[in-house]
View 1 (tube, rainbow, N blue to C red):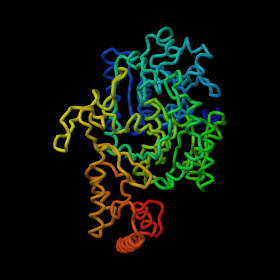
View 2: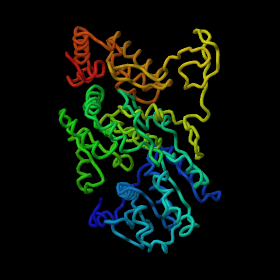
View 3: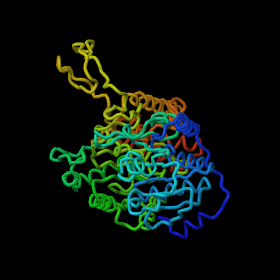
View 4: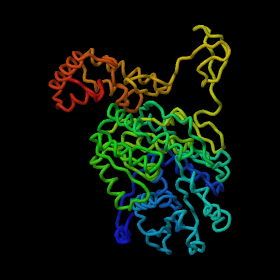
Length: 527
């Protein structure tokens, strides 16, 4: 949290150059304004995590303030207050007021940043004339009691702009369509990945936690007490540590856990295994939390464990591995967790994100690339609407029956379908691939083999892939491409000599050779 002195320093008049918006961000804002122009008062803006939602918010507010309009930002977490204010400062909007415990009030400011927790405890703002209310993480803030009071009684005349990356509610009877009358959409995650604005995730599912004894709570999610007993077990935690060493070694990593105790235990296990780690929770002072965040940013720690603290409002682009060890029925929570690892990080050379899913959430809710369209109506399937179908193949001994695509056994003749989303890469570790990614995966591996046969550097295959698909291939797709899953010692030695010769020819450092060895053989090498 920023101190009063820091806010005063930032509030001094300085000349700034606002961030340059990407083309899709400009169109997103134009679509929002188009709804306002035709009279819409409640507009929902949906933009994927990492697409620059906060930048868009700041630009809209800058436009409003330039016209003398008064704006209130409503958030539900401390971190979002600080994140929003920092972005506003980048647009030169330093003079803000805060309706949040510990933050400085300025009742004359055109911009008020408020938390849903503090708003009910103060009432002066009821007389503050607001023209625009921005609801950050609208899938949560729009349903707060104080927000409903604003809409119905306090600011019924105001324009409400809700922003969210995940417009789904755990309660199936609640819908953002009941609150907002119009919606604007930024590009879907798969479009941002294919355009090079987000990195490509690679999904792995180790042995998924057994949830047979875990019930459902009143809120529709798993019972937290029972879930902790199922997930916070030493043998499961040790398996996660081993999986991380196999596939994500050296990466800045966020682990999502069931509760604080689970986060502590996971961080302690990684630390005991020689991986500098920490956990954060809501009981820690902001200074301590920010210090831990800085340590992760500087790679002084490599793993940060938390149950909810970093699901929203946390922005560290260099994070390139996500451990999902918190099973949930919430689609929003699932995609919020995945989104923490998809931002670009040119400074660290990040090209992908490893997702280690021991929670079963990927199979429960899907890949982030599966989100093709979004509706505000409850129960809508964001991966394409009506459930897709397939034919039991007569050419392979099937009966020709038309089935839903999720059936893996024909109910008419018993034909067993090949599992389309699973590919085994590393012993005892499952990589999950969508049908679309399967073709890309095979293409990349074929180019790696071609590069090897022609004595090209492996980077040639990566460049060919990037030119074809618009994004870098995940590192994990390279493992075993040339020598398979069980390479012999002499093959490792031969490949080391092969790479060394290329490195000498291209004047590459020894670290380059080590990197290419890791891409082919993983991190457990014997040569």
